[in-house]
Image (cartoon, rainbow, N blue to C red):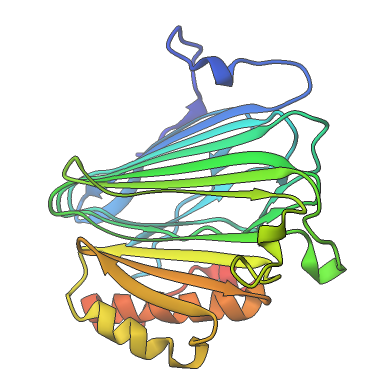
Length: 290
């Protein structure tokens, strides 16, 4: 049975999660495992406006979990923390019902921290929708994945600098994105991206060349053929995407000007990876079609 309840106050609560006027301090802890032969959400505990919707079981052996942030966006000074633990043999797909918006700052920095732990034999699919960084926003995000020896994962992160569909550019503010991956306590990846609003890097040909959409797709534990089939799958996106392999971690990068096109490309790669594992066409989360 899943448990959904507010987190109790505790002396061990991090200092940056303390309540303070003018911002949200929210925390979500979830645990998934195998019970009665299928993956189930065993525990869900929250504090503040972070929670999960009722889990779905589409019939592909996985549990689909939607992470909800009811305010709909991250305001200056907000502190959000998500921690997920996937027990042995469990298979979980996490996504979000909408883009995560980082609003213009009043001088304070918003922070989002995500800690994901995947046990031996478990499979994690971390597939949130994009983060939209408003002009003038100041925010930092950090995602840390800990994979046990026999764990598998596929994860993506999307970033839109400015509301480009409305003609807004990222001319002021600061956004920092960090991603760290460990496998069996061995560091595989530790990268940090920093965008300063209006910096020459955003428009220079040696930088982002004016492209507002950035994506990273990571996979670990899949068959060795994944690298080659992903490269084949990107044949129509050669000018926007590239894929490589670092110590067994397959990494795909995307840089473009259209989030819908970018998402379609990565969704196709995700589908390829799943077919390598399961055979039939995977079942997409229903929220992606709404």
